[in-house]
Image (tube, rainbow, N blue to C red; front, side, top):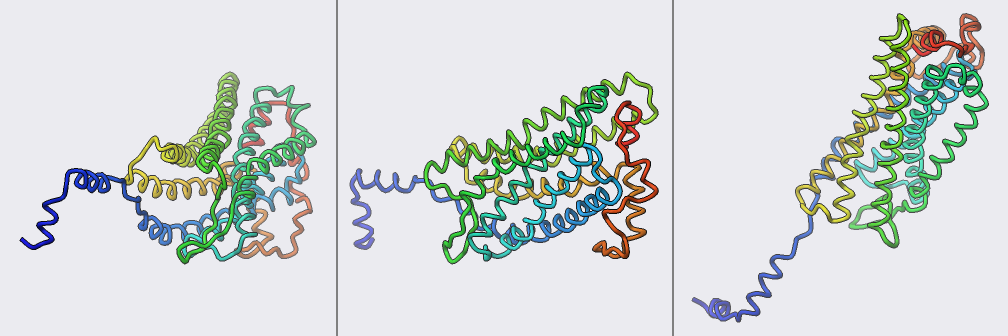
Length: 360
């Protein structure tokens, strides 16, 4: 036994307790593997969502201007939903590059892209909610809908919706910042004071405005629609009910996992949950579920248009006159009403039968 060993054996009790007290201090939770996971999987997934979302929603805008001519409240909501999704997907190439490398676009774009992401997120969900209300009025309160579902009211409610979405996304514009740390430049939300409180409030805002309120309104509207449809004898009733279930199921399937994980992250911020393995799992889950939620903006054209017979006809007509993958039109004026649709584009709203014909 050497001198060092002797010295170690003569440690007094207080030093012994102090030593083991230090050893029991929780070590920092390292998450190096999470960044490597994001670098590998997020850029291609973001790129795919961007391309599909850009293509699908651009087609929606073209069809609305070329064939529908925005003659009804529904058309206004569909246009705004497509614009919301386009605003959202246009932010994805920046986040894809950021996931692969670091933030190289500066402070200004950090704030703008963060705002675009949140504004597109909130407005998209809000317009899905408005479309549920629009269908509810058209089918359940068909007589009242003659006065309420006008183009003017559609524009007014759309402006109000964009105002709420912009206000809800202001924290992303105000608190997002670009900064350098450990030889890497970040674009993140940083709160100068009460950071935990702000993080919790932000997560609650996304859960309440992004899931709880829209889902509650959708469930009410569609349950009333289904009850009304079962009372009437209509050959397209079953198809309408299936489409309603598809809308609700897809909304739940794509957005609920993300909101659940976000709620668990809030519990971690509040130190209700304290486990490094759980934190790592949540970080992986937030990347996966967030990407899953992104896919929903690509599905909106499918949900609200491609399942409809009318829109399939419009798409066929559009691609007969427009060539190429980027829809480079050859002599087709997007502002000119197609002759074949001159009589069918008017939106009669007096009966459930006609409403189903227009929606399906």
